[in-house]
Length: 284
Image 1 (tube, rainbow, N blue to C red):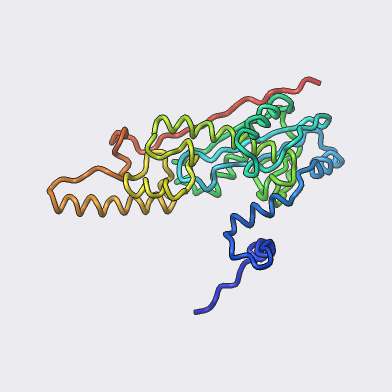
Image 2 (tube, one colour):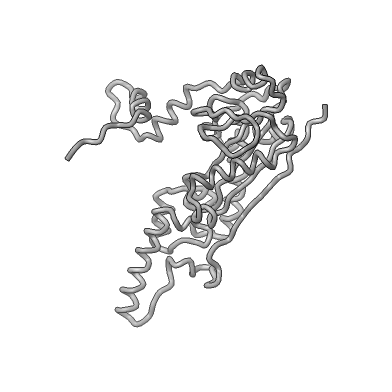
């Protein structure tokens, strides 16, 4: 059988392995790369030099989660006010993100938050849902930006945009958007944890941890899980086989992973969540 060659991105990450170090996952090596990058106003300055006055950074979080919405934020920073400590939200401790998010909201020209719920993600897939959330965050932003910095994607907006690979680790505006979106989504997950305590959402934030997947296999998904994601629909298939075996053996079917179980009603198939926060306006 032919050996699959590593992609260009994989080769770049593999160069980060230390001499004599054993193989590491791509996510571990990516984080190692992000830590080496410096978050600056370089791209914002290029946009300002090109004539832009309101430069927005936009980013999303929750793309890889099994539960809940994908959340995007757009932020316009003040050119004359530096918020120290901005970097990719994945590299920051939760308490540091909370402090920075408060500073961003207080000192930015404007910000907005948008989300696409799990039902919509299942309908159009997570890639297009992420683009939709990013575009919606920009369209909700007041004042209206004349240039947008985006983390590695091109979105459907009317103004000029710059696509930046690893943008949340290189651009202060994108990093600020990443922090705002991450803090907001984490807060929603803590709220959802009270509604669905079985899944440990306050700790795993809806992501695919070993414990989360084990609970899905044992109890099945909630109505807010992304039914099109493999660990979720595989858990449903496993639960269906279990129900058939149990029904054949005892004449009684156990309710598990069909979305009808602990605290769920048979009539509920999906629950959407969308939050739009008006951007604060900067008074000149």
